[in-house]
Length: 112
Image 1: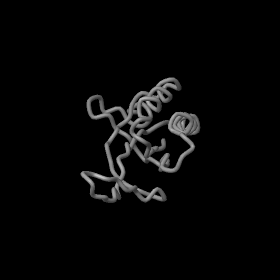
Image 2: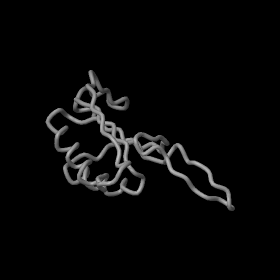
Image 3: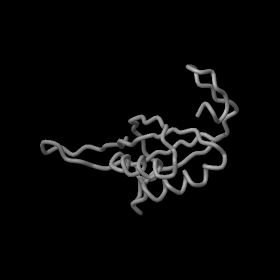
Image 4: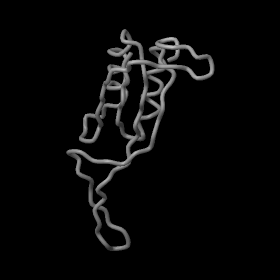
């Protein structure tokens, strides 16, 4: 099993969720986060004063999938989240040693 963490633009969340649902992935955790990379924030003007917004709003998706669905999940996220502009986000993939569903005590891929 693998854990996929994707940092995406907030307005792309529904598209990514739908794309994952189409390939049979329904469970995920979404967190509203702030951050920056190469995008380095931007400058805004509020009541005549200019200020810099360093941390931009993003959504962080976390999902655990079976090894045979990892490539499809990554492709679906990229296709749905990509705008072609700076700040589209990142995807990180890590190994998961074990998963346990608390309610039923199922383990491994059955718990996901």
